[in-house]
Structures are given as C-alpha cells and as structure tokens.
Picture 1: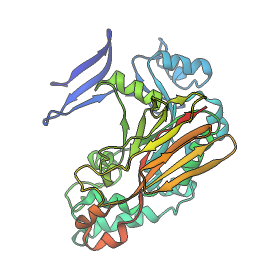
Picture 2: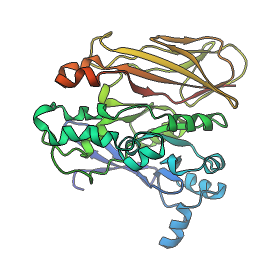
Picture 3: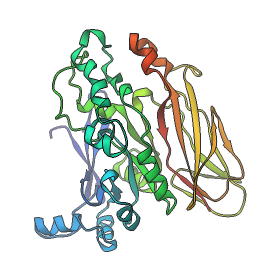
Picture 4: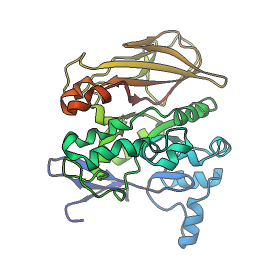
Length: 345
C-alpha cells in the first residue's frame, strides 16, 4: 500500500517494509500453514497451476523439503499436537513450534495436551464481563492462563534426543473470537494484544528480512513471554577456550566447555525487583537431565556431550501496582524465556 517499500535479495522481493509513525519498521515475509510450514519464501517451489503448487507445498518428502528450501524457506512444524512422533522423526525440519496461544486458550486443544479444558475460558470471563472489578491493564489477563505446557516441552526434548532442532513460539493471533471490549476499550483478541503476549527474539547481524531468515533457520533465537517484561540482557552461550558458541551452534569435541548465562533483568525495572530462576537442561538420546536450577548467574563447567537449553522463570513483582486486588493471586512464578539449544559433541 502507499508508503510501504520492498526489501530485495538480488532481483527478488524478500519482504514488504511497513513504516510506523514512530519510525519503527515492520517486515512482512511469505509463509504458509501446511504439512511442512515454510517461512520466508522468495518464490513458489514449483511452476505450474494452483494444483501443482498445492501438491508441492504438501510434499514433505526429502525432495519436497529441498524444493521448499531452494525457494528460500525455513522448514517448520506447527501445531505438533496434530503430529505423530513418527512424522516428526522422519521429516527434515529446521524448527518445531514449542508454544502456541491456542494451546493455552482453546478448550478442545487444552484437553488434548493434558490441561483443564475450561479453565482458561473461565478465568478470562471476569475480565470481559465484570469490567468494574478488573484492572484496565487488560493485557495482563494473560497471567490468568499462562503456564509451562509440559506436553510441548517434552516432545521438543524427544526430538532433541534424536537431532539438533530449534524451537519457536507461534501465536495464532486471529482476532475473530471475541468482540466485547475489555476495560481498556479494546477487544480481547486484538492483534496488538495477542502479539504482545509473547514473541521470538532473533539474534541478527542486520535489521533485514534476509538476516532474520538466516538467524531463524540457524536456531539463533529465543522465546520471550513479553507481557512479563522485555529482557534487557539475555545471553545464553557456551565457551570453549577463546571461542564462544551461540544458540543453534555445535561445540566440537576437544577442550572443556562451560555454559554461561547472566541473570536477565526486565528493561526499565530496577535489578532485583523480580525473583528469577534459571533451569539448564541436558538432553541426550537416553535422558533429559536438569544440570542447573537456581537464581543464577548460570555457570556450568565441563559440560558433557548433549544438547543444552535453558528455561527462565520469573515472579513478576513489578506488575503488582497494575493488578490491584488480583496481585496476590496472579503474581507467581511463571515462564519468561525459553532458549534454543547448544550442542556439545
């Protein structure tokens, strides 16, 4: 539309750039939800009519995945509650979805993954239908149903026992469920509200779609439940001598390896306000082991071979002034950050 611009890779459009009034730029790339859900496409994987293209997008054989990658795509699996272990094991994937908003909200899907089917809807109801008794900081309704979903994390760890594979957060923001406004005057399921609840942070070398795609495909990203606060300084890394390895990378066998992660702080909040706990997991073909669980900073020396990732939990005490009478109930330890793995050979 008027005012937008193209970002190109060579002679190919790689993204549409949408400028915001405050100077921020949003880049929109092409992907789809399907058998293998490709992200960052530069073109269709095949030429031909709609039927030929549809067949190509549904082809998750090794040849089909290669065609998608040749078209610029990162290959992901979304909604893994609909996938068998056999399909996940046999498909050449770059990343799998490890959290999604519909898991936390939809009663039928909550039931599939072992959660109380109606609990989220019941908790949400007061914020929508009893406006006088709930805070106008309506984005914080997320605290009512936010939790770690073991089903997703266990299936990711199973994949990490077989191969190095990244994880990412999907949001499923649809804005088509609830229209009654909340206390802030905005509908409960607005895009702005839902897409603020949690996001993927990519570690990029430049602010371009190409750099974002490269970081995403390499697993150089982490997931943040932003409604709790933006981490100002999250850094999970492995050190081997003078070499530093980022998320998504593989540390070769040889010299000793140390994992480090400073305690992240919320941007704009005084250090020490919130209680933070960091958990380091080691995943091998035979077990998932917690090798560190504490307040941090994390330092794990002489790391044995395996794939390592961390989960950061926070008790968001800085949100207390915004929750009024609900603070005692809602301010509790909650997931804040999920890292991507680093492998030690």
